[in-house]
Length: 437
Ligand SMILES: *Cc1c(COP(=O)(O)O)cnc(C)c1O
Image (cartoon, rainbow, N blue to C red):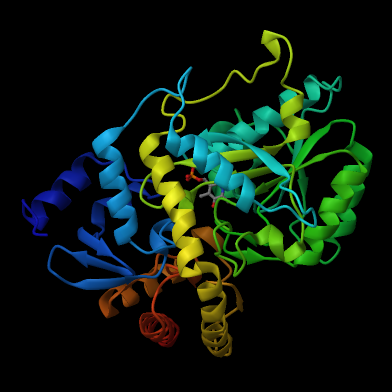
């Protein structure tokens, strides 16, 4: 597809009027953005016809790559019959059948039957977490335990940008500007960098179980803080501890879900099911949509008088286009064996990262499923070493947005082995050029 106006005109309008997400104003003013005109599979094409491998799956969304032909077809078909309708006194095939299908695929731990049996639709990942916070709070209020209204979250956690979700967040630079309006939560050390994390957390849960509504975690992989990873055994112990102390467990699989870690759900590595599951990102692939799923026990607390209902739900709840896409996403996962494909490619990433980890200047390296990570400094999200790698990679034909001093690959799960090898070559060359220069 050709650009209708010049690249310069687009950049000028962008610099002058767009307020970009997660971007310092100065950087925006002086940056030389990619002007993308087309995206297909693992590739982005810019206004000059240059191609880039999408090493970040467009903020961890494009697990099936860009513009999967089956998704494009379903979207086109759905828009031709029902593009939108309010789901109030109305239901429709995409949302109703998607719920049925999600219940079947959701994590169920060791239970032969589905555990997460109710689906509440949202517009994005933050919305799923926000719904989880409200559901957990109201659940305890209507179970005769209104004092259980506090949340526990991990250091370095990221659960989204709305005020409730941001309150759970543990990334300092994202919290600081809003400190005055965020609610207070019980903070536990991250198992990614704290040897006694479990003992500390267990103690916190035991002593505060009468005030805790839920513990909220990103299972196995804390994305936004710098792709921190931790062991499945910790998650299994957390599940047991929550059950023992009657505290709900919320698994935020907005990033880790849909095969990113090498299993359909990160929870699967630990063989557990949460009480509440939050979904987003890869959920509908082409459109913003997510879901919060909950157990029968939780849903049952909302039965009865009118004032026990969950008075919540955004205007575009259960959007037919998003729901139709989300169903097709699940069908593609089934038909193409996407998770098995990803698991088979994971060792390629692990090996590349292990080799690069030996370079002088690499502080730490790690990988899990289709995520490979290098820390190139100790500046965290505010560091700028990763941005030098970003520029090097751009010159070499890959889009590798960093998290400050942390650089990573997080490509579409469906990327071909040849493209994955090229991506890792560019990743390695860009890291070497940065560290050597
Ligand atoms: C991205 C993310 C969110 C927020 O999702 P949005 O769609 O940006 O609102 C929440 N939790 C986790 C773990 C995420 O990675």
